[in-house]
Image (tube, rainbow, N blue to C red; front, side, top):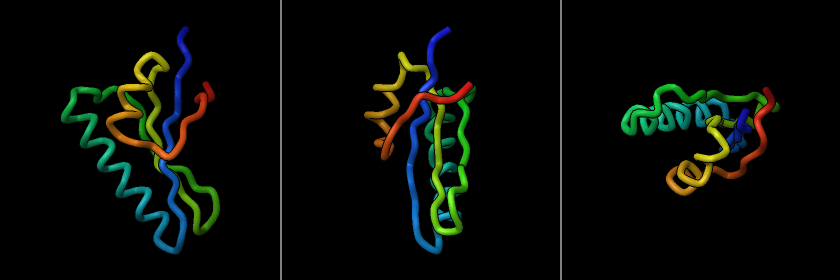
Length: 79
């Protein structure tokens, strides 16, 4: 089984929750437009002022999504 990579966009400040949720909408719009509807997106709570949006992709496709979407960081996704 191939590894999954979690591409992450971090947001901080008093509007971090709303910004992360709004960014996830844009990620989903990109996926829809490019017929990648099966991929997993979401937002993570870290603290009241730190949130992140994420996209989980197959390791083999990571470069494609990294170059197109410019995430802040990536990590191996937990199963």
